Image (cartoon, rainbow, N blue to C red):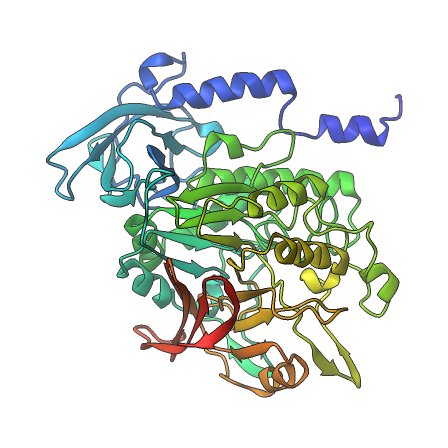
Length: 531
């Protein structure tokens, strides 16, 4: 047999070739109108003994005239196949101008395909800008819960205020999703989920160590570590059965992006942390990407193509705010030993890749919005700590890609609007920090709100020895704490306020929420001030 070379293997291991993708795009567009398709294997009259809407509903990627409406059918969510017949079926959907669904403004049918785990992505346009809508799905005599969504204001609209939550890192084993219930109760324009929607590992039963303390899982994962499409589908299904998470999805439109655990811990580009050959890891990554698309309210533009997902994108909230959503996983260079300073600083290494970097720079140079928000996965702040007599920062964050970090901060400073704030997560702790260059006396260039986890890390220790270590060695870090929660951002024309919410417990239900600390950034004057 002829040897398959690396280039040919990578091409073959993609999800689709260009021609196949063109057909897929047409099929996805037609999915929003089931009348346009009549597959031979259609299940014409589906009937279910129990509701197939066990995974809830969601909306996302809103525009000024529409959004994506999502659901995924599963009568038995923890069974491979979700308990669904392996045939496509017609699902009805409605959009209304009122919560009671009395004034229906749009309705139609879509096909739920077994090839996509019976997920629906109804991509709408033609709606009015800057107003709420309500929606639901129906199939086989069952109706879903009613979700609430919202279109963006018109690009030229003089918006006075935007409120949104920054949240992620929701390890199913390590706590209740109480923070999601509180987010669901907030009047928000949108939610930004920064990643780690699922965790890929197999549960460890019994007592294990958590931050040096004995810990027993609150609840366990079903199944082994995720490798196959079925594994990932079941893991998403288990997370999505949580009613607090479902409530948050149903309450507001979401912008989502993935970090590492949606595939494998600390993966970078075509490489994992275990030394798996890239050709093999890319097969796993492609299956993880498909499951991610199936379970998120994403547009067809993010549909996995040739093992790749288009995730960096932009949204505009009138004249007030541009939201730049980044992907810091697909295009990054492999992490390096932080002691190898030359590699850490190498201009040949990047965390976002050249194309995405230029896209971001072009967006940040736009003078139209009052504020620019960089919504991404891992800290841009250079948080230092001492360990074994050595002071250093993380290899998996922007601090491990100093050339990328320096170019971004240099660009923000040169543009000179003084209106850039970054929102991210991953660290399982709240951080509020000003951003400065690491190698020159730049002054404050921007500020960062890093949201702690929803549940990852369990109850946490508050301002512990780790936090004190970082505060001691990171002069521009204002505050950090090891507690669970989220960040509520309240943006007006004159100020951006980041309210760091924390819970007293996630290991018990109904934890009490508080505002731990609040910081403000004044427009045109970079730097955090206590609010």
